[in-house]
Amino acid sequence: MSYRGQEQLSVPVTVPQSLSLPFPQCARVPQRDYAAIYYSAHRFFEAGQFPDCIGVATQLLSSDNDALKGHGYLIIGACYYSLGSFDESIVYSKCAIECNPSLAGGYYNLANALKAKNKLEEARGYLHQGLAICPSFLNAHLLYASILARLGQMEDACRAYEAVISLCPNLLVAYYNLGLLQLSLHRYAECSLTYMRIASILKAGGESDKALGYYREACKLEQSNWEPLYRYGLALREAGRVTEAFQMFVSAMRLNPASAAAQFQVACIYDELGDDAKALDGYQKALLYDEYHIDSYNNLGNVLRRTKQWDQAIAIFSKAIGLCPNVPQLYNNMGNIYLDMVANLSLT
Image 1 (cartoon, rainbow, N blue to C red):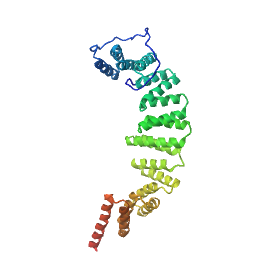
Image 2 (cartoon, helix red, strand yellow; image 1 turned 120 degrees about the vertical axis):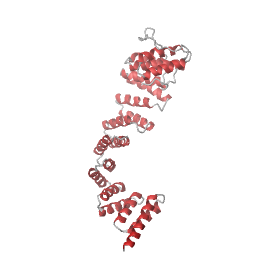
Image 3 (spheres, one colour; image 1 turned 60 degrees about the vertical axis):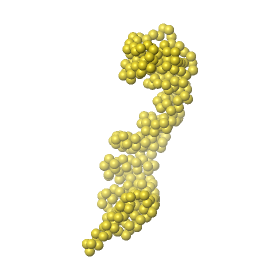
Image 4 (cartoon, rainbow, N blue to C red; image 1 turned 30 degrees about the horizontal axis):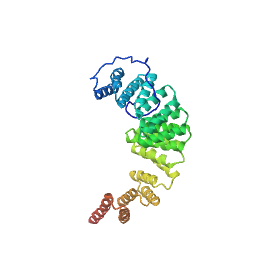
């Protein structure tokens, strides 16, 4: 629940005279030091001491500065929301907006409380106003998307979650919810892409097991697409599950034989297993489909060197250097071939 300036409204409202604070106004600071009052209230709120926060924040309401008074109402409304008193939260959030119509947080808090009361259309209206004031308000976008989903407006909710992702490309909760909506709309190809993105974020965060699960589901959702199989294979290989990874790469190649990336990965596994003939064949096929695949040139040259096909290895590295002259490893590997040739001469 936010109480900082990020939302808006235009309906003039007042706090009913019968509505009084059930908590003592404790922990007072000097009456006119409104900055100190504000930060004291903020500390109480962050500590979850909502009754104390209400007591301190009420002092802000005596300020002649409407912006400061608006923040006072905003903080109090946020406290009531956190305490489950949604009616009071609605009243104070509206007062915050009346005092400061550009306070985006007021619209957000108000919409949250209205959503809790199941007044979804009204909540959506206030959020729409808040987002017009602060289009980059991430939590407001999330709330807006969830309300659209609750209203059954699934396509609009998908677009809303996509807007969240455009603001925060690695926000997992947005991808999770977007994926569920795509599933409900039977948009399996799009859901597969969403699941691959979730898996990528999880893997980057060190949650490899969860990532593998999402890659696996992405494969099931889009069985005619080679890419989920390929991505799943990469994750399996990184996890040390080479046999399963190999199966995924082979399956990916069946769907897209022209995939240099998949051909390369299969060749790498053969290379690691010491099957030089199949490794050479795989790297050559990868280069057949992508003549600029530098990793294939490098690995192919190394296999040729290992099998003492030095002239061919030099030709491969020379071609690779011509295509990509800024890769030091290519020069180093070609130099090693000459060292091997010199060493071989000294033995004969």
